[in-house]
Length: 234
Image (cartoon, rainbow, N blue to C red):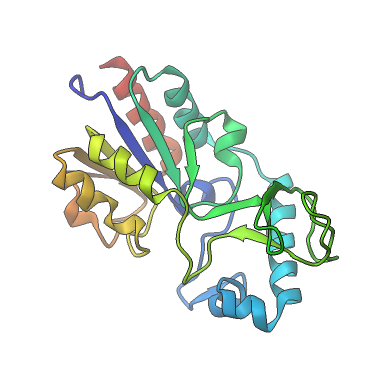
């Protein structure tokens, strides 16, 4: 680990699951008893915006009931103490990384605590519900706010920043991801092409495990603090 200077870390649903946040979708294809097509696509929002708003209002309210776990806290410690470049890319839309103290962070799939106005195309911090069609704090238009979530068929945020960080990385770490959702599932290939060391931390092997130099299996709350200790002591 001594030669490592620049690090990119990808976190997925397996990190927040240990705080009590349900993973994206179950084996039956449903997300919290809803079809993904109904609550996580632009077409679903166009068909039934009230359903989609209720769904994300409930997810947003759930954030008040959960707290960061040791994996979030360890990554925040790495953020505070790592002297080189670091980018934590999360697929999660919760705010647990921030609440743990992470700052070098990019939400590639958006954030529950942000609202996007379709009238003025501006994004605003948001912690309450959207189902009552509130006014946009930027342009005052009513009924034009949607969850600032990247749905299937939409472009993830910050891809240029992520690509640059991966090309400069000496180490790429994937934590708690399925390895099934692109473009995130392809980050390990970019990192390997640019000669970075690659490590997967997961409860079980992901679909992309064979692409990593090393896979460590177990709970994120145990594996992540151990890796952070290893990095900071090198």
